[in-house]
Structure formats: C-alpha cells, structure tokens
Length: 126
Image (cartoon, rainbow, N blue to C red; front, side, top):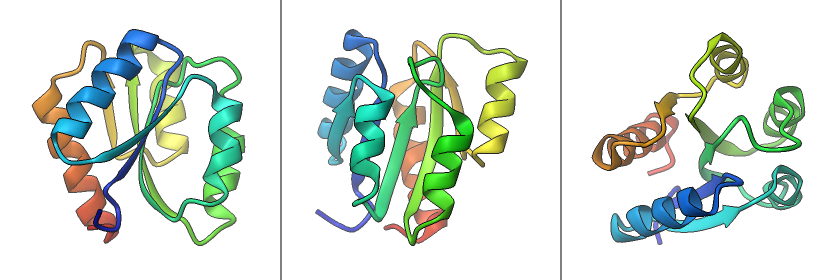
C-alpha cells in the first residue's frame, strides 16, 4: 500500500459503510470503517496519512474535537463529508474542518474516488 492509500469511513449507517468499503476496496484503497465517532478518535492518534470520509450526523461528532486532534499532530489527513442532510449547519462544519469535499448520499462512486485521489495528491499523501 502506498502512503495515503488509507481511507477511514466514519458512518453509523451500516449499509453506507458496507457500500463505501466495497467501492473503495475495488478502487485499490485500504479501508477501515467505524460505526462510532469516539471509536474513530481512539485510532486517529496513530494515523499519519489518509482520507477521512465522515458523516457529520454521526452520534457524538464534535467539529472542534476533530479539528483539535488534526491540528495538534503531524498528521496529514484530509476530510470529506458524506451526508444525507445538506444544510447550512453541515456546510459550516465542513468549512470549520477545512473539508476538501462534500457529497450528498447516495454518493456518485466515481466522483468520490476522484475526489479522494485529488485530495490526497493535493496534500502530498500519494
């Protein structure tokens, strides 16, 4: 696996996790998925490269907490939001986290793969 090929899917919707994992594995990414935000935060301390696909509606999600974790370390992770609730509040959360992408569910798989690759190249992860 190349640096940056790691994708973290953080979504409490089982069908979304399964679908995204299958899609991204088929595209050559190494995928780890999480049903809970706190479970994901425990792992994030050890990861340096990759892309976070995050549903901002997930239980326990705090924009400031994730922003703090990402800024206090030498991590080079990019964030892409995937949500079924496209509104001003979720757009503000995306801006606060400097998310590089924002997708509505259901997601266009090819567009998502392109966005992940673009984001990782932009951050120097690939």
